[in-house]
Image (cartoon, rainbow, N blue to C red):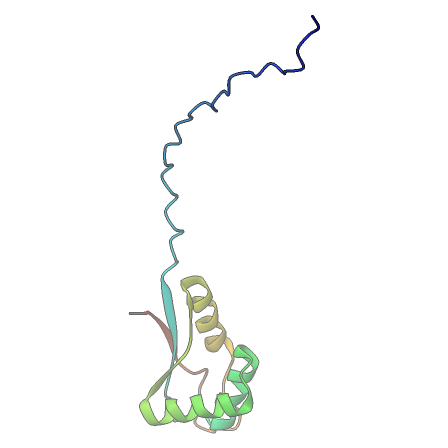
Length: 119
């Protein structure tokens, strides 16, 4: 008698069960508090000065700068930018360092600006 052509079947072995404990997810990164850069009205600065300053310091178009200058004149203030505290401080300081308005005889120095927390 010859050997059988039947293959030897090995029992099926199941994959070991691995416990996959849920890992605590990292908390989402905290967002830095945001601050507004506020420009305050000053009757001793011309629209041309404000527009020039906003174009130079913030990269606004002439039309955007004009609209902000009009808002400062009408409302007494305008929010120019909302950003991180450090960037807001830099922009406020740049406004203060921009210098006086040579177009206005009554101008004694730069415009006033402040920063305030976003709410």
